[in-house]
Structures are given as structure tokens and as C-alpha cells.
Image 1 (cartoon, rainbow, N blue to C red):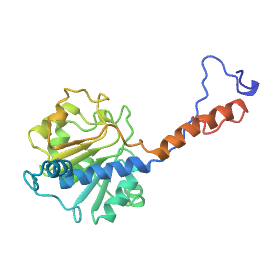
Image 2: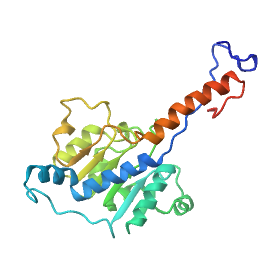
Image 3: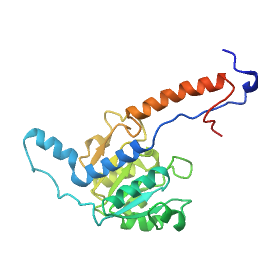
Image 4: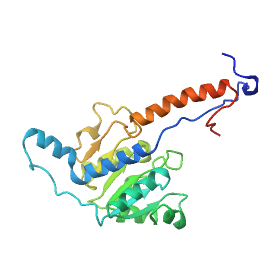
Length: 237
């Protein structure tokens, strides 16, 4: 098909439109991972099926009264802050552009990155992957965390130094991690994370719900129709 004259572009120019979808499923999955780690639910489910009952279950962690550190207080991070407050947690936040005023508006207390890592019982990552955030959490950052702390990442794998995280989990320098994202996806069969019983792993499921797929595919149809009609929708700049 030939696009309308009003929207014909040179070879060096591209018209890009965005799809629909909700960020709620990703935020909810992040909280599910946090709860699974706190109560060791993955292991508990396997034991129950095997008829071993409480054998091998470590002492569980109650969320109420604990500190939740949110890295990135945008749309997803703000949802995590709401969940944390609903569970009676103290919520603190940090990102490169965050201010005390913005943090308060998002339902959290602004702290430095070092304070967040060293004092939080749970650290939840809600940052976009960029040159500034790639490798944001290195071995030195993980070393600042409590031995009882749990890290949750539903954003992008490369935000955390994966090798450093594996070492911290293997050596029990942090209590656990809930991960939906990885450096290489799908996760290779022989990946060392698969062998760690203090890591809860899901296959990048944050966006994978019926509601989002309906929005994604419907958005594609709307975008094509709008382009052909000369009235593009959700144009990305």
C-alpha cells in the first residue's frame, strides 16, 4: 500500500508509534517475586509436593516494619512504593534524577544510593536500561547490602552486574534475589543462576498477561489504520 502523501518520508526519516499496555502486571510480578523470596515459597511449594513439609525451609521474613528500597520511582517504582506501604513497610527511594520532593510525591523518602543499599531489607529495581544505568549495581554495591537483604529485578538484567550477583548469592552475602530479567534471554540451560536455591527465577513474565497482549495487538492495528488515514496515533518522539 502507498501511504498518504502527507505522511511520506525520506529514507532517513521514520515514523514510529507506540503500543498500548499497562505497567501494572510488571509491578505486580515484582511484588510476587519479593513475597516468594521473603517466605521461600518456591522451595516450600516443591517440598509440599514431595511430602517433606517444613524440611529445609529457612525462617521466613515478615514484611511489616521492614525497609523497602526502590531504585527508580517512576510509574513502576511508584506502584512498588504503594504496595510496600500497604504491607506496613518503610519505603525509601533513589535514582539519578530523583529529588526529595519527587520522592515524597511518590510515597517514599529520598535517600542516597549508598544509604538505600546499606539499610534496606528489600531492594527493588524499577529503572530503564540506559548508558547511565547499565552496570549500576556492581560488586561493591552488593557488598553494602545486608546479609539478610533480598534484591528484586523486573527491569533489565544488565542493570546489575550478573557475575557479581551470582557470587553474592553463592557466598550468601545477600539472602536472595527474585529475577525476571537476565543478561541473556532465554536463560541458557547451563546458567549458574539455575543452580542457586536462593534465587527465584521467572522467564521475563512482567508484561505477559492477556490484557497487555490485547492492547499490543490492537495497538498495531490502530497504528496501521491511523498511518493509512494520515492520522497517526501514539507517535513517539
